[in-house]
Image 1 (cartoon, rainbow, N blue to C red):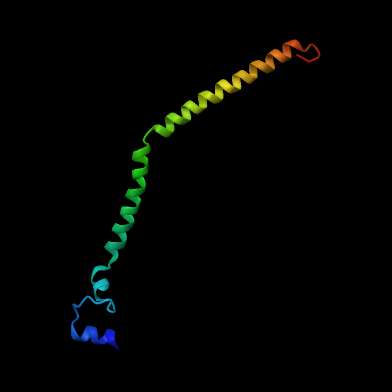
Image 2 (cartoon, rainbow, N blue to C red):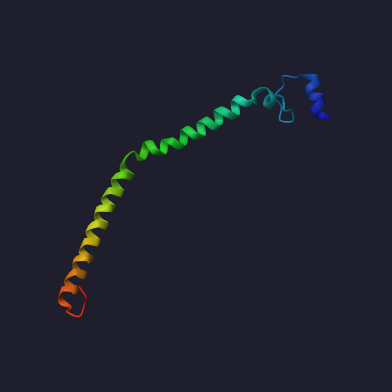
Amino acid sequence: MKIIACFVDNPKRNCLLCCNKIAETMNSNVIFYGLAKIFQGSFLFFEFIQNKFNYFLIILGFFGLFYWLRWQKRFNNQAENNPDQIK
């Protein structure tokens, strides 16, 4: 009963029991602009990272290449010293 009385007495009143303020400010623009801010904020992460992740992957690839080449050299030396292997 108090909500109805609030609207009847003063429709512009901003009390906690009334939804008048929410009804005045809530529309589809609020939802769409809110989603836009969320998406724009998620792209700030990429601006912070920039190309650091790409550089990290390139360096990691070179470390992996040299690690693999070192093991391959060990296997080749082991194969040369073992006369029982089929070549």
